[in-house]
Amino acid sequence: MILRGNSSFISKLIALSGMIRAASLVGAAVQNQPALAREHYAALVNITQPLTVAERSLESVMVGELRVLASTLSFAGLKEDFSLFSRLRTHFTFKNNATLNRFYRNLSEWRDLSQLPTEQYLAAEAAALDRLTNPWHDEYVRMIYNPVGKTLLGISGPIYGTYPRSIMDFDGRLRLFSLQIQMASQSVPESGIPAFLRNVDPQFRDPYTAQPMQWDKTRGLHFKGHGKGTQGQDGFISVKL
Image (cartoon, rainbow, N blue to C red; front, side):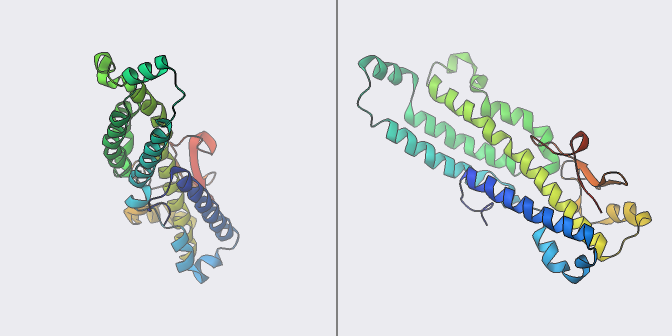
């Protein structure tokens, strides 16, 4: 509910952390007691359901951040202790309404980027983030107008830019845990794992490639993560069977 609702960026990060702990607990329980997957299948699968587009989206986050920005700029504009020089400098270098309007225009780009099918994200990311986080993307001549506002938005952009990869890594982790539960409930033998992974519903495939999840005896079920601070050997995210 928090992920798909109109929550703050921090609230979503906290919610993700709690969901990761819950899913990891489920995975550890099934690894040690595979019979749990048969006895409590519906409940465990519900905990590890892959994320929906609405849950991955940055749209509600950016709406909330826009409200915060508008409130902050409004409060800053009430200060009366600025010197004449400071007021003149601010007048020519920072435009309140233009900054808010630019953030509002960026909102749809953040939404579209985060709502892409996950397997299309990496190919689209570089160009999109350059538009959203590089204040010089508008060329030097256009930076004459509202340079401070454009720079502030460019500085804040990278914070949001790390979110799509992080949440897709988490989505992939949920898919691994769900596969673990399915395999344990069906008592899939080791020899049958490759065929099982090839034939599962597409929602349980590698989020970045749409290919079947990988498996080997050393790592277990795994895929290559791309988020900042991805844990695991060589950047792979894995779940032991």
